[in-house]
Image 1 (cartoon, rainbow, N blue to C red):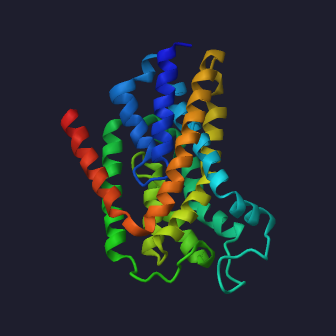
Image 2 (image 1 turned 120 degrees about the vertical axis):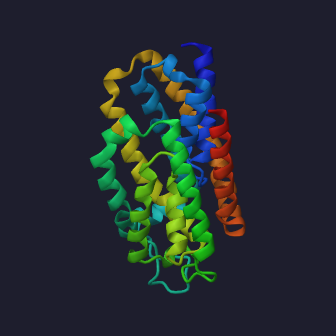
Length: 275
């Protein structure tokens, strides 16, 4: 495989890893970077190029699993001795995650083909970036100043389902999964950190499902020459996501969502001027 294509895989993996869990839309950034600069579709088929942008999210997923490994062990094995609250009856359960996944999971299955065919463009990403930015600003403005849900173990099923509903917006490329779900959590009375933790944990099964489905569906378009491209992108996404997640979780309660929203608005203006 051409060394230039492998370099592009590293760059796209870096973009994916740095932006997947920041509320700025990793898919949107990859579409912008690829369509306006790297142009991998000139080297690969459209199906392989689009699937690559989804499948390298597996690298980011692995980074989440590494960061939250104790939490996932707790969810799967229900270790009742572990809890982050003073009330042992309060704890995040696997059922909270399932409830949060249902809305976007159902809509994703119903509209996957339409999204792949019609929404992966720079123009649609600009729309998603802009509307998502306004939602994030609204969350910071109208969210509870002293949120009753300060950590993820205090989340209610009502909050989980409402966050899941708002996550449906992230099916539109550019809107951002973390941007929509963290905003939804804050508007539902969660702290920014609690909403971010729930977002990251909920992202693992839904991203695994989307990546796996896309990979199986488009498997016939792949050739052995594409494998190094995917491996390099996966490793790059994992390493940069690991750095990004740890940094983001340290700062989110302090800076909140508005700085990311301002960045998104500026990005849309820059893209518009370039186009």
